[in-house]
Length: 449
Image (tube, rainbow, N blue to C red; front, side, top):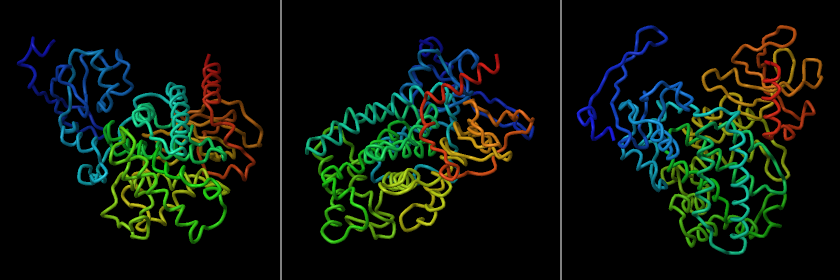
């Protein structure tokens, strides 16, 4: 290995000046690092070969997962890291361990956190995301059946499925965001559990949490409502407000879920804590222990935000769903009583202005569906134009607004506003599938050739 051949280079530090937008230049401190010394949390700024000769999409990234770590090790003999952007081992361990009682604000500077770049494209990730989505859905169904029968949950299998979701989100969060817009009334609990897991992971990614913490956070989201499987289905599906003994029985799902997970193997304490406390409220008006803000873990606060958002955009049983803007507007009204302000701001940032699955109207009057957000040019995502300005159906072609795409009349595609699909008699569900996306990309390739 190079570490034994060139030991004198291990501590060598270089300063490299790169041009900034203002032309002033920014000093970047690089440290030569033999590949056997590379670990999670390190920020790679240079490889031992040109970036174009590597499979990595961006020049410069934090090593966040074991898969990324192994990929770099398989390719390179050494790399250069930026020590100023590299997490310390203590930070990684704090964020990756049982974070039920860890305050993220003590480890993360919320105001100055810079979200990571996508590691892959939506086009390449959507097929993998569908497999992860289907696998995790199947596993959640199994967990629900086990819980309903009073059996232990297989924590190892649950972690394996969630790890697939974490890897997908780190590659391109848009892919799973697209898939969670699927809405099946008869699978509400299963879908909600998966959606909350994915949304929690997406917020965790935006906060730059390491892979181990994202897996734990995803587990918290996936299993937070597992106690409901011990509640009679008639009560869960009952319309209207519950009162008296029925309300007490429903509220007991937090304790039932905690006890079930406590008796199961390979379940981290943060998952137990979230199952017990996800109905606690910052103002002390929650249950079962009437905890207040300082006593509620940040993982629970994240899961509460994710659960609230999913319930609004996908609709609770027997309720109509809302748009992304309607959801975030409602959620801002819950700051201080139910939702944490700083984490909600980060959540809204992580979702972007136009999340995948939103129906938008262009300035020309055409209607389109958002496919992939653009993290650098937030107002110019990738879309599929569904109907032209005359209301006629359009071919399913992916249009990249960042490239100043124009319609047949030469008008530049620009988004005017988000619209309610029901008002335009659009059923978005028919578009939420990888086949639709694949068809759109195929059409675009054919048009170019």
